[in-house]
Length: 151
Length: 151
DNA sequence: ACTGAAATTTTTAGAAG
DNA sequence: CTTCTAAAAATTTCAGT
Image 1 (cartoon, rainbow over the protein chains, first blue to last red):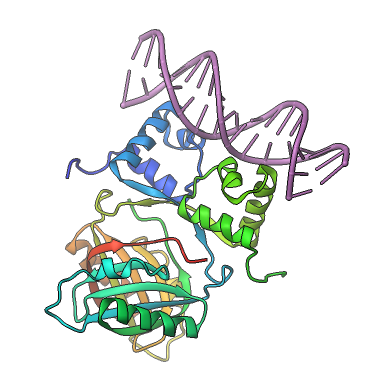
Image 2: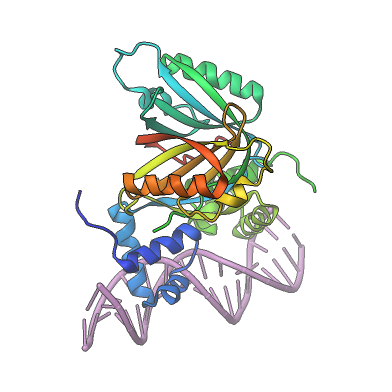
């Protein structure tokens, strides 16, 4: 790893872009008190350093036809098998996030599907692709999600 | 509301913006095969309908000083108490997402903190604010996160 | 590393088919 | 929806401090 903690100015820029990923350099410049060029430079550097991993539109699951969210915990069927689960799972597009976790289970997946039947099929594919047992927690509602980090 | 399932063109636009939230209208127009005006119209409509909830930069937790991610399951101390947990928790900035879930526990939180000590303090604040018991699952690594949805 | 300015591209709105 | 127009705004580069 290269650098220490973020400078306050980079922090401010990152915070603004986390809150609104389409904020213009002009807008950012005013908010953080730098010239447009300076902000531009810093943003490009933040992107190159990997501090900013990318930009994304946040979509409403209900409105895009994926109203069912679930958390799926994974337990390896064969504890001696090599741990290449993420690789085995990454081709499954319904899996939005994959976390390796400490605890009884090895991984937790966040998934989105159109329906209970879609979830059933997804579970089958996950078990088959990764040779795991699954424990599913259905999300009933999402009071909030993906809020900007503290910084 | 005239909310049917998303038209294929809106789907394509939403998919592109989920993959890169800063894509220009010019760029989008080429990719989905419409004029810039038409794309502009559709994007604005998607934003207004709430299909697109917003745009955000995705930041690297390690590089912004929040290397520790955890999933926290919540169980109410008093099962008879009114269910206003999200409201009681939303002021805590370390909580990125809050899911109401079916199962043994009532909520699952995704949080980011600087350190184990930060997590300890966060847990104390969550228990105090919401009058809940917590069960914490520490995230060891994140093979992938926040991938674009299927559509 | 920042400022200021210039050149280019994009955004945004509207008119007309 | 398309194309066209046009002004305003943003992006991007670069010389100068």
